[in-house]
Length: 176
Image (cartoon, rainbow, N blue to C red; front, top):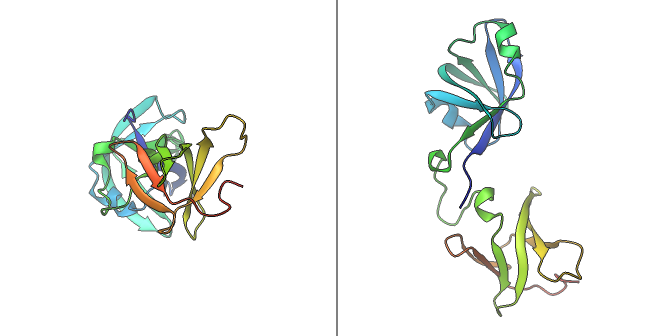
């Protein structure tokens, strides 16, 4: 897999006058920030490293993570970091329970039916609340709309990230 960096948070607004930042976690494990010794901050393009900052303190407030970074000691310095992305490499992600996958691992996987029909490749994972939905770019060039596959036990039979394949049981009406 060719993924180099994964976004786990975004610097939102400043917090107080002493350079604290309010992070918007983009991870199911916001508690991970409490164990991080430093944060790698990237520009909005996700590719340009802005800098690495040692973490001095972390606390949690509602849906935010408040961090104090070394060398950022005023509201003016903190303002300069707004909008930056906190990223980690894939090997630094929190391990998921067996059978669960990160979205970046699913993007690009081929989708086939239990009968061996190739439907296309996963181009997005929509998080609807009730269950995720795979948005699949169809293999059939005549089909313009993505195929939407509900991620439910009756449909998704197997996910093999190593082989790059998701096997589904085709439900009636799914391709209509």
